[in-house]
Image (cartoon, rainbow, N blue to C red; front, side, top):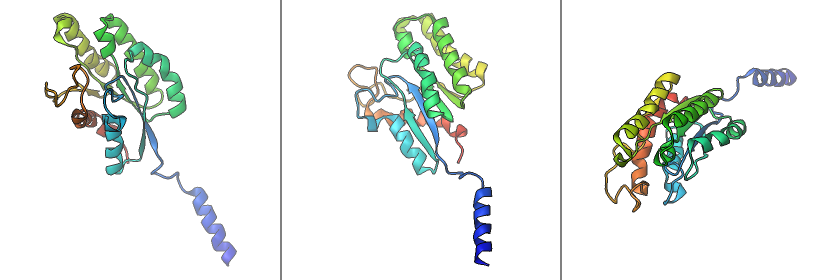
Length: 204
């Protein structure tokens, strides 16, 4: 009878569904704000996200494909190989501020982000991260720049983090001397903003 039980066990294992805890990938496509510019990479919000996912029992690996100085055009150019290699279940898209700081046409920024969203949606879900520009870029340009994220979110029916740096203090505690890049102390705040939009997309 031993052969019978061994055969039964083998058949049951073969018929069982794939392991539910198999790791899926979250791809972060961003710029210096996600690349931990000026601080240790382990201190950045992306690494803090890895820790939180593990702590909460989510079986996701996180790939940080962020590059300091990255633009929407650069992110779009890099995207296809990243999607093919990592096959992410979720793409966190945090790009556009470098385009805005260079005064790039809004229609070009919007077009690049739209293409990134469409390509990413062929692979999985997308979380769009909104940004704002300093007021000295002109009221009209800065307002339209910020609003384009909301429009893209609505147009593509994807969740939006309205502003990555919402809740940061305008002080040396939260900003490096350049007044643009968050400090290590600010990273938990960034993660909190990201988490609000990301959590509904996660599955155990």
